[in-house]
Image (cartoon, rainbow, N blue to C red; front, side, top):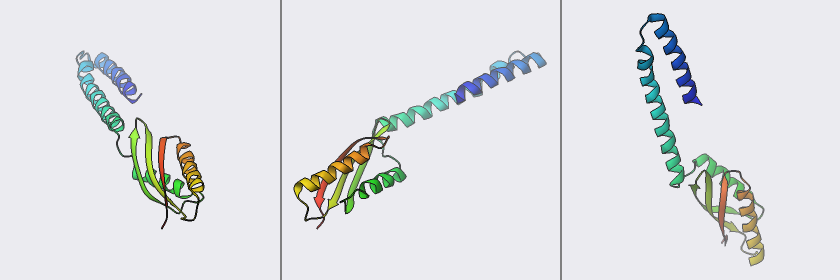
Length: 136
């Protein structure tokens, strides 16, 4: 939309000025900066999308939010490790969470499932692989 506005405004200005001054080539000269702007915008968008498609790391502030969400799950003592990458426009997470050592395997598993459910309910998270260990 930004490029459409720039092209439209430049066209109106160029047509108006070339009609007012009689210099017909002015409209063509004004197209050069617009073409450069469109090319730069296309390059920037392509670079941004290539990073997402290649599995770039999500912003650290977002990772901190996801770590806090996992740590706030009942039974989680702390999040020992969090790894993430973009999977397209969404985030794929790998976590190691620590739980009390006196839990049964079933209880520890249920905590891991709850962490996964909470993380995947976030709109930008597509998958969360949670590994549960006893906190020694």
